[in-house]
Each structure stands twice: as C-alpha cells, then as structure tokens.
Amino acid sequence: MDDTRHHPLDQEHLDGNALAGALEQFVSDLTSAECTCAGCGSSAPLAAALLYAKAPGMVLRCPTCTGVLLCLTDQGGRQVLTVDGVRHLVIGKP
Amino acid sequence: MATPTSGFTGRRQNRDTDLPPGQYLTGSFPVMSAGPTPRVSLADWTFRIAAGPGRTHLWNWPQLQALPQEDITTDIHCVTHWSKVGTTWRGVSLDTLFEDVGSDAEYSMVHSYGGYTTNVPLADLLDGRAWIVHEFDGEALPPAHGGPARLLVPHLYFWKSAKWVSGIHLMDQDSPGFWETNGYNMYGDPWREERYW
Amino acid sequence: MRRSWQTAEVSSTRPETARARTLRLRLPDVVTGVPGQHVDLRLTAEDGYQAVRSYSVAAWVPPRELELTVEELDDGEVSPFLVGVLSVGDQLEVRGPVGGWFTWTPDRAGPLQLIAGGSGVVPLMAMLRSHSEARSAVPVRLLYSVRSPDAVFYRGELAVIGQENTQVMIDIAYSREAPDGRPAGRLTHEAVTASCFPPSDAPSVYICGSTGFVETVAAWLVEDGHDAGRIRTERYGG
Image (cartoon, rainbow over all chains, first blue to last red; front, side, top):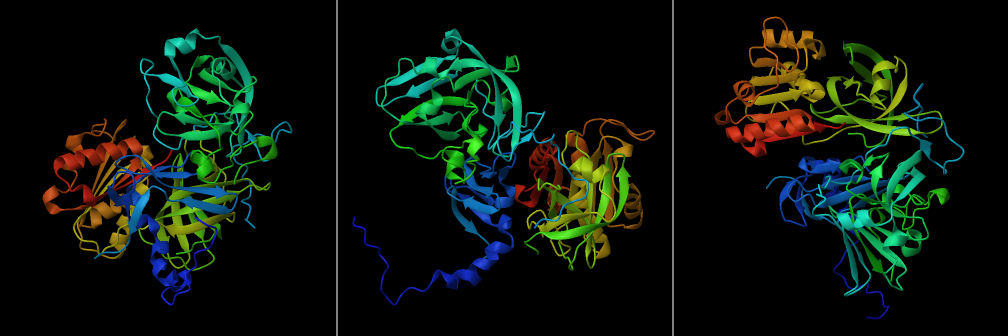
C-alpha cells in the first residue's frame, strides 16, 4: 500500500450529494425501518428493538441476540451515531 | 439558545466547589446501564489478567476473597454530570492483583460479563488508584451496580469503572472500548472535563 | 414533523388523578400528528441545566395545540415538576411529534385491540379519540388495567365513549381496589383473553405500559394464537 489517494478520474461516478433526495425517506421516521442485525442476521423494526437509555448514550440492541445495533451519543450538541451492528435498514413496502 | 422553563431546577443539590467542572451533586446512586444486567453466580465467577500468550493470571471468587481487602472512601463522577461524594467500597487493590504480573504493556482493555469493554492506561490502574470491589456501603455489591464485582477507578469518569468486570487484557497500543468507540474520551479525566472525543 | 426544538406555552391544565394531570401545550406553528406518537420535552434551568423526557400525545387540538397526560413518578426528576409545579403561561421546549411505528390511523386494517397498563393508556386514548372523531366503523376494544378507581385517567370521557359508541367496548380491570361489587386482583391470562378480539379476527394490537406488563400480556396473546407481527408494544421507562 502506498499513500496515493485513490480518487478515480472516471466519468462513472456522481457526488454523494445526489443521494440527498433518496435518503430523505430514511430521515422522516427511521424507527419504522426494518433493521437486520449484523451479528445474528435477524430482522425487526428499529421501533421494536431494545433501547437502553439510562446510560451515557442511547444504546439500541437486537431483540433476538441483544447485540448492539446502534449507539447515539450527544457530545454536548454534536450527535454521534455509530451503526456497526446494523447490516441493513429497509424502508417502504415492495 | 434554549428557552428556560420557569421554576425548573432539576434534581440537583447546589454546585459544590469541590466537584469537577460541569458536575452536580446527587444524593441517590443512579443506575446506568448500556445493556441487560448479566447474572453471574459466585461459583462461576472468575477474574483474569491476560498479560500475553501463555501469561494469564486467574482468580476465582474464594481466591479473590483470600487476598488482602481494602476499604475505600472516594468521590465518583459520572460523565452524565452527576457526582456522588464519600462513597464507600471494599475490595482488592489492583496493585495486589498485578504483583506477580510481569509486562511492558502500557495500556489495558477492561472486559465485563455481558460484553462491555473500556480502555484504561495501565499506570492508572496501579499505585493505589484502582480496585476490584465487591461491596458498596457495607453490603454485597448488587447486580444493578456491577455485582458480583466491578472495577473502581474513581479518578476517571465512572464509565471506566466497568461493572461486572471479568478481566483485564494488557495491550501495547491504546484501543477504544465501548463508550470510547461511541463518542467518549479515550482517557476521561473529570477534572480536565475530558468527556468526548 | 418538526425536527428542531420549538418553544411551547402551557395553555391549560387539568387534573386526571391525584398523581397525574393533563397539560395542554400551544405550539408556535400548526402541529399535525398521528395517534400513538410522542413528543420530547426539554426543560432548561436558569443555569443551563437541561432534562429531556418523552411523553405520548393524548390528544391533538388543531391547529396548534396538543395534550399530554403526565403521571408523577416516585423519585422522578421531571414528572413531579410537570404535575405539581408547571403553570399556565410557562414555557417549555417541544420536539416532534415523532415516532411512526406505535401509531394507528383509521385506515389501518382489522379491528383495533388496545391494552393499557396504568399511564400506558395515554397513546391508546389518542387512538380512541381519533377513532371517535373519524366516526370510524372499525370495531375497538380497550382493556385498561389500573390499580384502583381513583387512578383511572379520562374516566368521564371513557364512560361516554363506551356508552355512546357502539363500535367501542371498554373493560377496566382493577388490580388492587375495585368499585363496589367488582373483583380486584392481578390481571390474569383468562381476563386478557376474554377482553380481546379472538385471533381469528386478526386485530391490530397495541399494548402500552410498564415493561413487565407489556412483556406478560404480549406473551399471553402470542400463546392465544395472535400473530406477533400484529402486536405492537410500547414500554414506559422508570
């Protein structure tokens, strides 16, 4: 590995900015999204997961395996969301 | 700017000048928990210090109880802004547990039953500054507060004092534990108000 | 939906029980929401100390008002202030309404089964009120478990709805103390089964109460043959 930044000079990619509209629906109510746990693979709406809120941050755990799905902390105004335990989130119906 | 609500003070006593910045005194002992409370029977309980391959030191409950016990009175400071003064604990100094552990490592990861982790520099666990405690206020430490045993490192924010402690793994390089991965400071000195990244 | 904090003013209050009262809050802008949603309240002390809590909306009062019913918790930090101290004209901050899962709208399929433990009746009352206002033909059953007659929220309104709306059946179960001639005691599996639509009606079930209440009742319904996917729960903290 060298230190070269791999920014492809191709004509194929746009800017992430173009996703703003498509991602908007995840913003309106994320708790309704069906979440698949990266640990055990089971799925449930985020609203049905286990929230531990009496802690330095909000810890949301998988209702099947109790592994951490995501964690939200407030750094005195700046919000930090970590989502290591989420394999995918699905919004909307087929 | 937030709009103040007339008459609201919250459940705090007055700011005490002896407290670290941004802390408020509480008379209660809030239970903070990032996950389900593990139930560990004393028969199954062990505590280990892993100093490297083949250099694991292990204690069971009777062995921990047979070590010299110390009574500790200290103030504790939670990163969620509450402090509690004059708390009393009983347990074994980590100096005692580290007596026969040889290592050049400078860092440690503290592990708990239930999967919680937090990183503490090894120096902060030694010299009479950290204990494995199993009594609070003269009683066996209840599971909600970390029983059978928790780490007590009161000179750092209280998330470093891991509940349900199961072991300490020594590391050559610092690495973040649970809250340190999720927005909180790698070291966590309350007097320097090292709350966040 | 509003994503930032807005300053609301207390426009009126009324007691529900000795330990609970309803607060009507007036927001600066038009507020619309769905029954079952909640708002976050933020209280700020003069020195900047803040506390944030979530409360279910009990009623929507268009265009700019909503009502919350707050019960005082033993050892609570915020609820004793909201129930005992906050006065008409005081200001507090509101975020929301939020939440899209524990919600019901009259277009949702199937009969509506509501099961409340104590103050868990609040979001279910919003659903019941919405059902009445929409003159919905959806059959509804409410099972409301409370300690004693003097702990019942919305007593008069529930009595009126139960009598006048033929689509709605209300059962109140008393755990410690009951009105004359009625039994009191812990809610049983049989009583829950008897007060619920059968699984064959495929009701949409909403259960709200303490963690213990919600877990117990939900497990009974699944045992009775209700589809777990049609059961939505909301646990009250504390």
